[in-house]
Image (cartoon, rainbow, N blue to C red; front, side):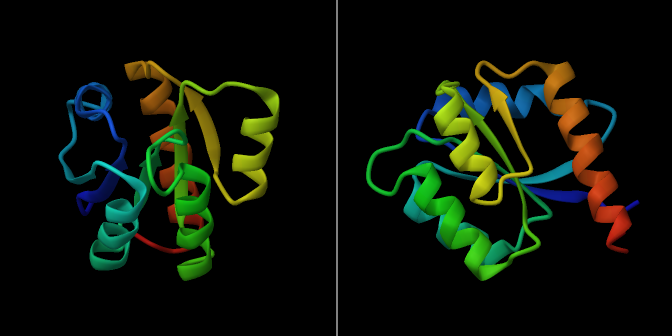
Length: 129
């Protein structure tokens, strides 16, 4: 199986490190990081990741704005939102904007592993190996 490419967009370096530590250890991933929405969108354009993990609350371009731009560029993009904003309205807006799932912070190895498995299932269903 090809290594999956993952983009992690979060303004907190600690949150990015925690998320990376939650990735399954028995697999290798090509991980690209961005510290804000604008650079996340730039990395998304440059790298075309298989899966994107995106925070909602960031300075400058918000995660919701970034998500909308990502989905406009690639409507089939797989974006998993990882956020401390667990208000029902925020979760609904993220899902309506195209997020596959919304996961609460701090992420756990089990939650990230499960979300990755579901995301890879969706990739497989589209014929992307």
